[in-house]
Amino acid sequence: MKKTLKIILYVFLIILAFLSIFPFWVLFVNATRASDQITQVFSLIPSTYFFKNIDALLSQGFDVGTGFKNSIFIASSTTILSLYFSALTAYGFKVYKFRFKKYLYAIVIISILIPPQLSMIGFYQLMVKLGLTNSYIPLIAPMIAAPATVFFIKQYLDTILHVELLEAAKIDGAGEIYIYHKIILPIIQPALATMGIFTFVISWNDFFTPLMIISSKSKYTLPMLIALLRGEVYKTDFGAMYLGLSLSVAPLIIIYLIFSKYIIEGTTLGSVKG
Image: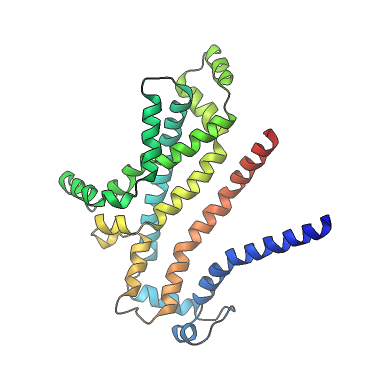
């Protein structure tokens, strides 16, 4: 009976893995095919038009290098600043006792429920008045205040952090800055990795906010450049479109593969402690 259940479980997991990988495989395969091949016949076997699709992108002004550079700068800056200050905020909510603490934390929770689209008009008007349009500052600075990241790290600290550890460090003469950098940040690495992946993906895939703020093509992010593929020149070149999408997805997969081990380590650690 146990063996049968184990086989069923493995089959179920294999099906889930296939459903997860299948769309990406189709995406990468179509990036190697010609436009007429894509529209006429479905295939899971790569073709030989990969380099021709690259030439089609480059010959029409699709600046892959600039798109990657801009997107990586924005996504990396957003992720680093968001994780650092969100973890600092979560640490403050966890350790310190201050007036209106519960109410302020409630505001953080409520902020998670508010769709960001509701504030877009006011946000744009504010950026215009501050003269920050066509700048990366509006794309990076607001992400420092990340209520979802604060909430997640606060919940993680509630499960693993013992106040006695901090008290012992203070007795040994450690200051608050030292404790945060040398004790708190190392023990919340799994939480940072988890939210870091989400933050990076959200920032990398963000299309509407950069479209609203950025006007210079030299500052376009990769999703903005990919959107240009649907213009008149590329309206039937599906191979080039799929190649552009593949180039956009590839860094996200790499980021996940690099940091997924920290998520697994955190889950395993939590299970052992439980």
